[in-house]
Length: 202
Image (cartoon, rainbow, N blue to C red):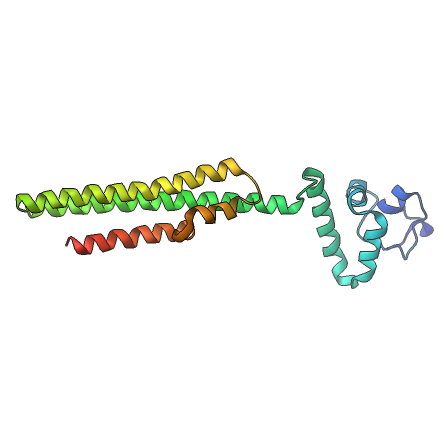
């Protein structure tokens, strides 16, 4: 791209730095004069000399992607001077973890309701003796309490995620779930436990 020497306006970098823009200007292909904010923010965060050095060390075919990354990181640093784009990534990961918790809780509730419905239907179809009926109700109550315990664990974990709201939230989630693993594995563990109980009482 030709610089101001051929009659074209200087690129955003040379215009901001008040210097002559030549055909060899490393900034000209990536910082056009009609978008001064793009270079201004990169210059503010990284410095023009550092950006120039990085671009010169890269092959020409990789420079456009490098500039896009620098612009993205610079904008993220302006919004969050401490974490930058890492803070944005951590925030999105936290939202994914919260959705996983909600999904696992919903699956646990559906599983408990389904099993209670199936057991009630089976008990109505084949009335059991009084003692066996008492054991059945005791088993049903125990199963419900365990399902609620799993659900309570997930709810507490979700509330903790909302309270933390930081880059370490995903790590805290893993510590709280402990042996149950991820939120999806928690639902699977609940399902396996309930199926085992169903087999024992069949």
